[in-house]
Image: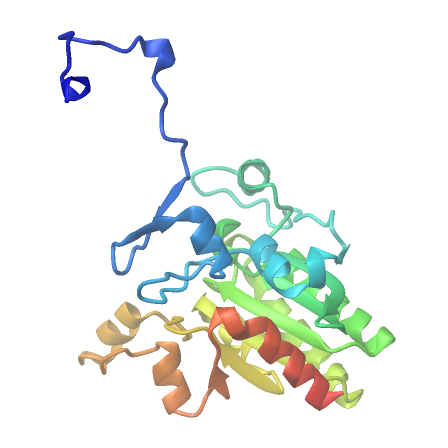
Length: 280
């Protein structure tokens, strides 16, 4: 058994030979605090394998999950916001746009694309919260309107994936006008008898909830998503009363009749394809 005995004391490994654990190898769930391998988390559609917490994701992840083999064609990919009001807060709006574009590698808070989903053609507009809180400005409204136009022209169902803090204050009235524009376009989509599915994710609030997010032929949501117009704190301070348990959660909204159903992200592609197949 002498081979179990360390003969030399004080053995040190040179720094250059030490191996560090790569960054991003592990994912810690913010809900249950348990750790899993990042690859396992991604394979599970970015949901926790222990508690099913749905991590907040963006358009790149949703497109990968939904489009067959991640094959799609993006619409209006290079459209970017201007500064109609010459708005300045802690920094000029133009500077904020440029900095956010560099940080996120996105042009604005929504991307639109079309491609196959389980064999069915589908147009998808998906919001990215990382771009100024997913706020709805002129570009967001215009890209959604053009995506709806594409759906009407090619008679392809339309899916809107919402995740937003509401209207973009730096564009003021120009932002609010997008509520009317997108709603009018959806009325034309309905007139053409083309299906519209609205998926509400965490969070969907403000003018987005007050317009296109709630106008679907089917309004669906992910588990635990925050859905509302004003935030819970604002409502609590306004009415001076405590709010019900789980107020504005997807489950609460479903119970009160504002959603058709809640869908687990792991089943999202199958459910969307089934709906499209039923409605075509």
